[in-house]
Length: 218
Picture (cartoon, rainbow, N blue to C red):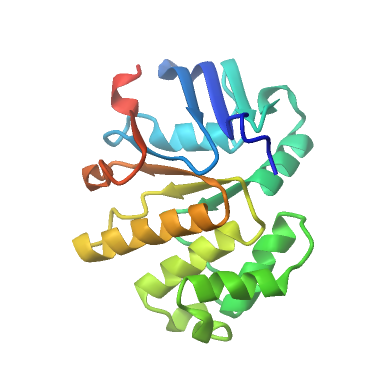
């Protein structure tokens, strides 16, 4: 468990570019049990922002600290370990493995994170999400809402200190969007994690502790 006084994520003087600068962030931080919505229109760099935090991209300038460790200074293998131990991601495309059961999808998440297999914790997560009865179900037989809950459970099955949700409400109507946001908050609060929601959906404003408007940072 990270120190409660150390931000889970902290970005400083960050700059990333391809042919021209597309992302500049002077400072960004999020603490345990804090939720923040990263908002901005298409093309403002939201996906790049998420990939920089996850260590999938490296900035040209600045630092990306995960629980106090600057991953910009680490080898690729070390970054993979930090990501696996500390970060869970719910992708817009959920990427559930269709050929294995709901429970095996969660256990696969633990294996990929290189943490001990904890079937009991995985069962507890499914119970928290109200889908324990789906433990042996195959992903192809799930509804959209059920699939999203399984993806969230898989993302926290290895007990990360940070959960990142990529556009979790963009394809949902208001009622289902509110349900998805409630589930994300429940999971992060129950598991003492931080939550970053990366989205262009302005309905998320007011649903998190803070808003970081990426469209005004350049």
